[in-house]
Length: 427
Image (cartoon, one colour):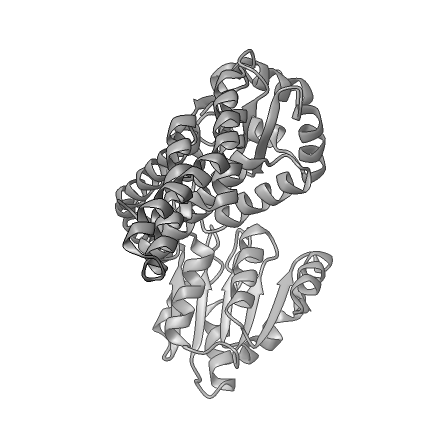
């Protein structure tokens, strides 16, 4: 199958180039309008923070990798970009790349569980733009199946692999049910925001946010239905919180052992979890000596992250085996979209129907008539199949592209349910 793809990703280009190549939804829509008919008959564009990839079935054999690269670079100019920043794939390798992306093993963060939805959304957008035809829809179905198998049959996405998420997972080990707990996130930057969103995902009962710039805290609090606390007043409320996650860029400690001891007295020593994910640290590490205080800093959390990453890496061979299995399945199907196998499958399909019906009604005929019924029904079947057979042979001889031929044949196979009947009745 002449499926071409190009990829610029975290392995091939630094972040500043990847950022310049990133495509918004509106840009993707315009790209599709420009690509469709001029370069590709059908395809899909995937663009995330760490990759931009274009997949497509060319309008003719003259379309090259350089054509697609130049198309992208001309519309997203960057003087530092070159052909060396791209990977090129064709046919089975293109599909393997797509499957590696959707399963998360090609991600910067191995097993990234967001990429599955991002790829699905990319295909949905391509469908809305009528950029997905018969073959790309089958490619999409295979990709989704591969992604789901990786999730359900392996541990590729299990375990926290970011410090923010590792912190929340540890919190869950202290408090098995978070919906009655109150949490404070100190710092509304990227790390603090991720930690806050992870707490929301775990159904935290009450979420509070503080930041030196109150406006930023209010903006994050509004987005997450949380409460914003002015930075100069958050220490007055320390005793109210079961969980404190601190992620600022302060050069000095924000919370001392003495301040936490005072808060614990007001809490009657009800358990408190402190997660310091800042560099330098925000919370005095001596607080770990206080009874009923569970303290972790970024070093201990990084140990957990590295252990989980090692587990995920060990799952890569299992995911690769799933990918090769699904590639084999896809190309077995694709190779069946040839004229001779389809004519045989079509005739076998009708012959099975004919034979089954005769078998069901055999007792209604005398032994003398049975031979006549065989001859008559076979003649009827041959006449019914004569024109479809002629048209199928014309398809092979018409000089159209293999993809167009496969598409036409695939429609016939789908129309008669040949593929599903062959699965249910293997030889």
